[in-house]
Length: 556
Image (cartoon, rainbow, N blue to C red; front, side):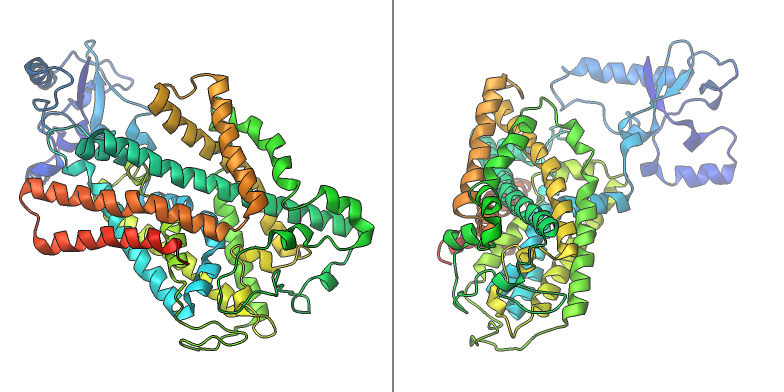
């Protein structure tokens, strides 16, 4: 069989004007074609055409020059048709279009853009208002914009990095493969390690949030069934749109940590539901209940079943945006600008706790370890940079919208702006129906996404160590027990998703966002003789920013 070209570009029936137009664009066409009468339809077909025989001879010529593993003497682009123009030309004289090829799965730009948006829109969106509060309203907005631009540039460097490698077929490479090419085994294993940090960090955050959402969902159902009113035991505003402050003893202007004792007893001070409180505790029992459900799901050989529910992520984000809009309209804006001084109810516009926001944003904008794969499905590869930029713009606008509205609408007074929680849904009581729906959506979404994350961890880790994605049931079970154990411990002793997100984001971002992309870019330019001191200085500053971002998390 011969691989041959689509006929429509140089069909015999075209007039001279069309032929001149085609020949004036040599980069858009290839020099060979299949005769239209040889394409399979309902009519009898002829034998192999002379043009097909010439192409076949040329391809065989190149294949004999070198072995299949050597790409230096592979057929050039003008000999091999583009993927979307490939036909299978059989010795019987007929050409068949390859169905189900890569081109059939290509997506238009709008689908690619929203795929990136949906992938980045994770749990970090719940912590954006808290991060803005930690940095200060004005400084928080500026940092969000600046960090988004930096992350976009580093993502662009990652996307372009395989194409800058000469004489090697990088069509199926990911960024860890690029790191292995430039830095050897060290680059391969270090990129794997930091990728594991981001994935396992996300799984720990998911476990904490699932414990939170399951607790509040169960409490809502119990209180509704038994007509229990919890409003008197919660410090917050009055009215139909209640906002609560779970930790009213928070020192305004200070950086607090969650009181485990307070969490254990939160909402558990009514005597008539003592038995329910004992068995339905956010930190003592719920994290362990989740083991019964999720540990068996993690041991599935394939995660394809759970991939069918990824659309729930889009629904959840859209509902969150609608929820934030409704709450902001009902609550109104409560803003006062105090540039450096802390007041009783408001935080200053510029705070020294801003590294906490940069750590959260590093994970919020993180997609660098899978951007190459996502962009391969883009139908128009020449628009990759534009589509990536538009996707980052949409993500940044979504974060700004949610963060600014929640911060501005938080009722201060009577509450303190410092009461905004790392999960802003915790600032609404469990009896709130709209928030109950949001928690239920997010709970079901996370239950379906959690096994997918575990599958990615298993594939990358087991594949590198054992060369097999599923070496045995006991290997997989041991790995899953370690991952689940980390989630349970954090959900019980330190359920602060803001801190978990910022530490994991700053750690994985140091390598996969700042250090490796900057070094790869500088090495590539140097080998081409194009590295100049302004570019070198800028990328060295990127590396220093990544280091400062990680170190800043330990001093805040």
